[in-house]
Image: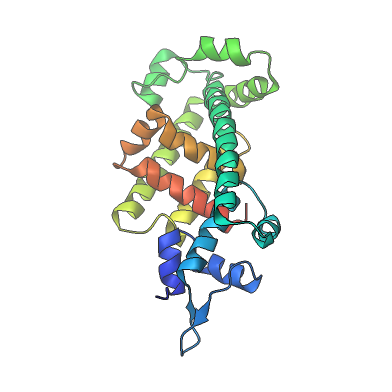
Length: 252
């Protein structure tokens, strides 16, 4: 049974453009073609794609993946290697997620607002509630100093603008989700890119790798998941997939 490029894209979560690129560089060449010349992928092609995407997720370049897959190694050996690499990455991600969470809290510690103004801008959520914990953990770090300096420069109007922009963006992402647009669609990836740039503009440098780590935090930390899902049930998982797809699109 052959699978069209559109079907493979839908099953794997990658774009058709990515599959075309993999074919062009010889990383994943479909086993067949239709009478009209369209690509047809076999079950073994799908397994190779799964291997590619796993190694890609683990941070290997396309050139490195091509070398790995060219080795005379059986499927079980690939799976064992990927399992060990994944275990190592899970532990690194766990530590990075903890660090990112602390940094996100630290960026808020320089807020120069009265309690009444904080309530007006943030509602019942007080962003300074972790101040003592953050100061103990991050007080001597350069990241803490930079985040304090940035946040301290924001006025009440700045924080209101940040809050409003963030809320509007999440609503647009929720609308895309409700419309049935896949998280790997252009519209969803464009929104994910806007999300990344918004963080980069207001809080700290957010490259694609940092954004991918944040995406994992959104579905592993219940506080983030509940906050995002308050806009639309399932939004946290949807945004995570869009962020990963956007990073893939950017070649990150």
